[in-house]
Image 1 (tube, rainbow, N blue to C red):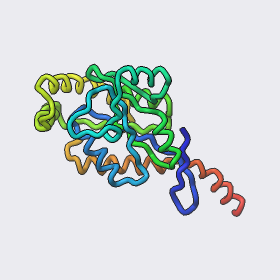
Image 2 (image 1 turned 30 degrees about the vertical axis):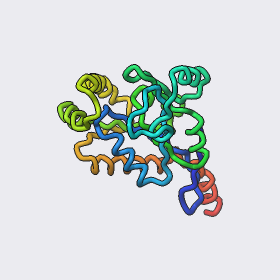
Image 3 (image 1 turned 180 degrees about the horizontal axis):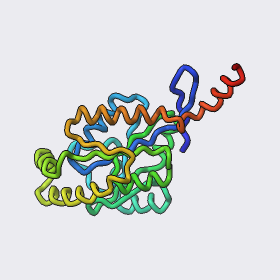
Length: 218
């Protein structure tokens, strides 16, 4: 999954970043993801496939790739997913081919996936993966946010809250953990993390040649 990206006047190349955002539903992850995509031209969103029904206002291929259960099973059997998981009796997965294409175009890739997907992706891509977990200020505030969204029944909200407690328990499987007290501040932290990870020495695949040139000319 190599993806050399030129990023400065010295012609350095770097490996692409697979940038994961995870959080319990309602903690602000989707808002931060949208803001990040709008501000980072070298970043593209990975669109997951799902078996759940399409919701009002959603667009197939933009919000999700909506597929049948049989099609999803075929994709899993053919190893077409980088990761996949069961969530609320439905299946969600990251198609491999579009991610490889984005990396080949010199893009970093943003993933909106849960802890299971983040773990699987890390097992496949290792050091190219950066995992950020976003926490709500409190479970009470998370519950209020879910109610204010007014998109789910009381039963679904209760299920999301139960799942949130489980998701929070996996915080230590992430590289960075942020508390979303204020969305603008949290967004600024996420941008800082992405910028720092892009500059990591381990991603600078052209640095060795540059150092050798400096030493030859010393």
